[in-house]
Length: 181
Image 1 (tube, rainbow, N blue to C red):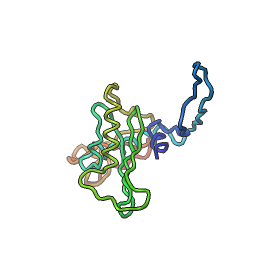
Image 2 (tube, rainbow, N blue to C red):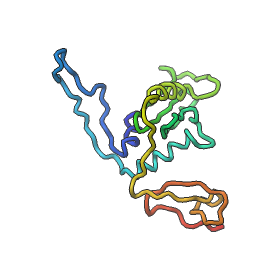
Image 3 (cartoon, rainbow, N blue to C red):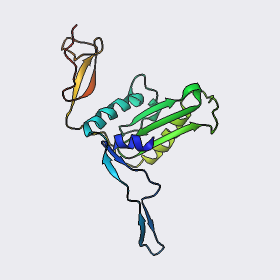
């Protein structure tokens, strides 16, 4: 899960996961490099639109991960629950780090809890601490992406007369037609 979400955070570049980056000897010489392989999995534009979609659980009015917001950091996250409430997930990232938290049991048992997703609470606790001394950061818009004001009544491009609107991001050429109201 972490490598999949990091591909979004890395603007569409998939980096093969590894448990180490390098091994050094006691005298400081390089013994081994991880040699991680990288490849483009999807375009920067697709990554940016996905990032913007994944900010909604954190900052949206009905967000399921609003407690994961990190001051000064644009944050993307997705909560998850398996059937029967056996597992709880929170997958998320900033421009600095990607992290995934899982809360569950080795054998399927129903998770009983009150309030927030326990995986999300773990994620938020760790990620807020590791970001405390980092510079503020937001996701940079990719070329071939357009922002469009959308009418909430028709989910089409808003006219100036539309009062109930929000902004949505689209790959260039995929924007919806004009509002029909």
